[in-house]
Amino acid sequence: MSSPRFPIPQGTLDMLILQVLSLEAAHGYGIAQRLQQISREAVHVNQGSLYPALHRLEQKRWLKSAWRRSETGREAKFYELTQAGRKQLARERADWERLTEAVELIFNEGA
Image 1 (tube, rainbow, N blue to C red):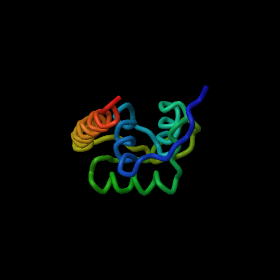
Image 2 (image 1 turned 45 degrees about the vertical axis):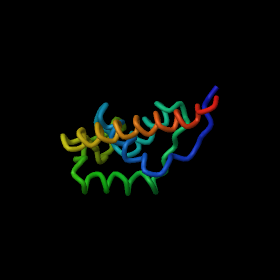
Image 3 (image 1 turned 90 degrees about the vertical axis):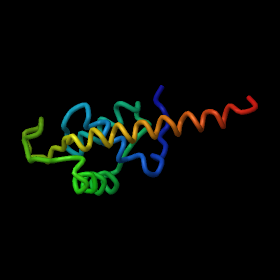
Image 4 (image 1 turned 180 degrees about the horizontal axis):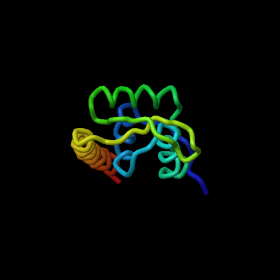
């Protein structure tokens, strides 16, 4: 049984992209597919959100990109995490863990 789709909370797309790219370099479509696969179809990112986010992360120097042949033989822009991107991902994961712990405490109050 697949999970229902839901909107990605504001401010988390960058963190999710960084996480996917910490696993391996990928092109935009591959990043979207990997997010969908890992989340068991719950997370779907449209191109109108994905590509501006990739551009923003590259501007911050958290990603670097290069044109390469994809698995289909076409040229595609592949993105990979930089050292600064890995550090940012570690910060964002720590912040996310603190936030989810706090939310859980609030939800469990009085339960």
